[in-house]
Length: 269
Image (cartoon, rainbow, N blue to C red):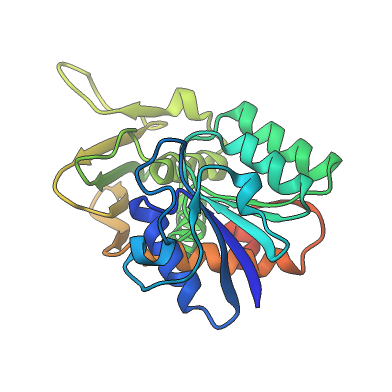
């Protein structure tokens, strides 16, 4: 079995990752990390996650968690991602990154780590198999339907989500722009208010809704005279993200050094 370390093991996503790794027939929990000062440091990661005692104690240092059994690290945290990737790569561990908070500079640094330091990294805004299929379908629809079909993107998440639009919605906008050869910053309109005038043809309306405990809903709407096509994905459990992350780990175990995304993992390119 292949050892996996979870960063942010006591968070909502981290707990689901721990549970899914513990349940996996191919993977085992090799380490668990939380931020320094977290009240969960020193506790059993499995008990915190609600899946029973594992013997893996949550630590406040990735270096401490990277035991000889560790072969991969999964990180869905929003901070310290690049530093964690550098540590993982230095220990010859594969790295799976599920955060939506990566900047262009972060992505360039991950590419450098993969190219120059022989890192094996998967970085994706969304690890869901269904969402990654949605990316492909939206790309094909945007190219096939053409400019006569106006594009609107609507996403909804729980009321504790900090960023808007979601990383997945942002990526959906990028997918449309790539298919139609538009520039994201010029095409995307985040919400509308007041006398905004007639809708331009080369525009993507982006709308972020927040409320309750919604895990994540995304819909891309293509509207033309007389018809409307909607492509939607609705998440009811964070387990779908965890399952995708585990697929990414298994993909990297046999992959050459490089920076990959979930389209590579799922062979959707």
